[in-house]
Image 1 (cartoon, rainbow, N blue to C red):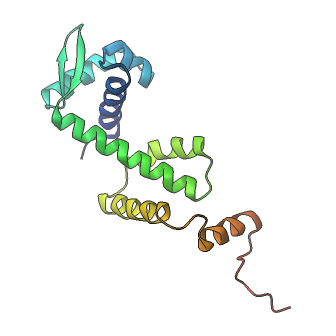
Image 2: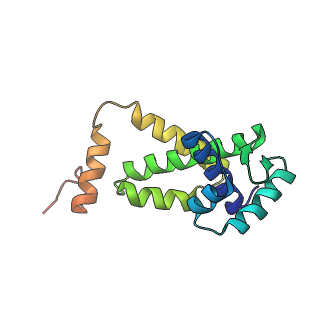
Length: 149
């Protein structure tokens, strides 16, 4: 299993290459808010491990191995954001939390979250149970509870 830091670098390289068509050390440093020297050190390590191709002073590119990891991290984050937003977490907070959570979940948990998010997305608009949950979050009382007073 790769470290959180390694996954963050691979995802940053992936995002930058998708946005700009290329990736450079200074762009990665800026995106991750780290020093270029730290990026150079990590990129050299990633190149040695077969995740990137690095041409000093020119570019950094993901190998297929690196792209696979980066896409997996991106997918985990997107699933987590959707899940947290479904729970009623504001999107900006969901994105922050997903960035942390994405690195520590067991693959089976991610698989189940993915199924749940897909189930919710393919459900009828505003399913009753989801509306009940939202009401519960707002009021603290389950809407199906019958008061016996």
